[in-house]
Image: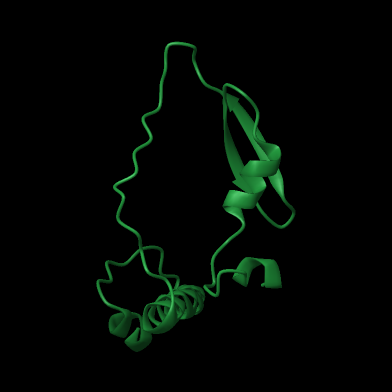
Length: 105
């Protein structure tokens, strides 16, 4: 992952940066990466979007930052585990509710 993706210290993505650079008036955008692509979708004139700010700030430093990064790593590992298990067993779908169940699969 590029250093820019960790600017805030968390293992986040580049969605904000991509849409900031590629936004188009009166369009929604589907952003894809590797390579970066934006697909613009016209928004009907009679639509509106409501954007709200609760005013509550999410602290993303110290222990919370570490916990976020750990969850991100676990999600990535879970994807690898499920993909490997699916490839070996022909699994197409399975209800899994905990990370531990994925590791045991």
